[in-house]
Length: 257
Image 1 (cartoon, rainbow, N blue to C red):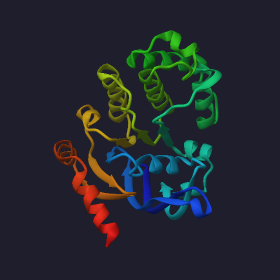
Image 2 (cartoon, rainbow, N blue to C red; image 1 turned 60 degrees about the vertical axis):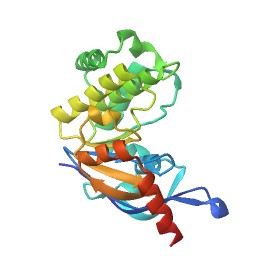
Image 3 (cartoon, helix red, strand yellow; image 1 turned 90 degrees about the vertical axis):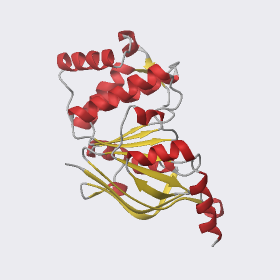
């Protein structure tokens, strides 16, 4: 069992007089086997939370703690966080010219596990996962994300998650830019991971459409750098019907007070 604990996390962007606080005291616990959906309007700090946990240098931690199984995540380098069991599926995956998908995946698996996977087994596993994600076998020889469609990029992110088998997966708006078919395939990949392991999932999204495929255990409404409300799957339905207007108004009134 793994536990990701976030306590009173404050994060800013920029330096000196240009510094702006984005996260304003976030408390969240994600355990193995749990799926947490974080929902909120644009600019509320959802992606900042994801990238801060992963160790992006753009973000400065000004207060609070993040631990994984009691270990200080914020003291770890980015690669140490990955080896500890954290995984981030990016909202905007970057292109890596000159590096094939097959080499990228095997190199990543070797770095995380400390030894290269047995080639015969690895090739079989990659092909099996690609088939399930409805990816053409020729995809493995293409350069990472170079010329990929939005759907291909997101399938590749889920392919990484399936092969690297993290303890906690943070999925940053994995549903953005996907058509209905790609959304179904990506969601099925996440659900397979949930059914086959005790992976903990932190699913960040604007919309409820992905939650029709991936049922969360907990839903957190994120507004102005804080969690404004928490509940079960029924909270997502409330947001679908009523939107974020009431939370945004409440946040502004609190700030003025």
